[in-house]
Structure formats: structure tokens, C-alpha cells
Image (cartoon, rainbow, N blue to C red; front, side):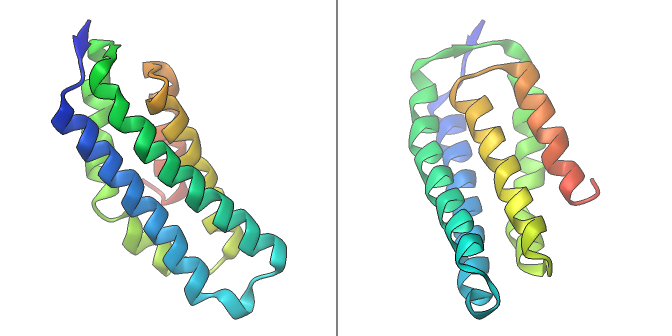
Length: 130
């Protein structure tokens, strides 16, 4: 087993902060078009993603399987443009679905499970046709 480096943990946490920001930006940009329930779901998702960013910083003190390097590489690639992709989504339910997939990924990373991480990344990538 190898340890995730502090640099990797910070990078992942930074990605989750960016994901939360993208969800928040979408919520604000579409405020007048959203139902109260949709606003609440997006707000809840944003806070969950921010909390995961904090949890992910703790990963530097935990050991995880060597298999995590490939998923981390996929996450870096996917996170480069995910904020732009969220902004371009027109269907609020798709944004809510993406937020849910980001939350699933955060849970898989916060409590490292390589199989769950890969499944969450696959589901997230599928949200955008990747």
C-alpha cells in the first residue's frame, strides 16, 4: 500500500471546491427558473461537495491502495473542464444528477475504495458522454 501525497490530497480537495463552485454558479445563474426543491437540492449538493473537500484533505494521513493512481489521473483529466460543462447544461435535473455523481465520487475518495472510485468516475464521465 502507498500513501496518497499531501499534494494529491490538496489537488483532489481543490477539484471538489471547484465542483461546488460550478454547482453554486449554476444555481445562481438559473435562480428564477428553479423550483424551491431544485434550489434546495443544488444547495445541499454544493455544501456536501465543500465538506468532502475538507474530508479529502485528511487523505494524506491515510493509506490507500496503489490502484488509486489511475483513478486520480482520470479525475484530474475530467475535472479540467467539468465546471464549464456544468454551466452549459440546460436541464436542471441533469445538473442535479451530476451533483449527485460528484457526491458519490467524494464519498468514494473520502473513504478510499478503489472499486467504488472507479465506478463513481465512470458514472460521472457518463454524465457528459465521456
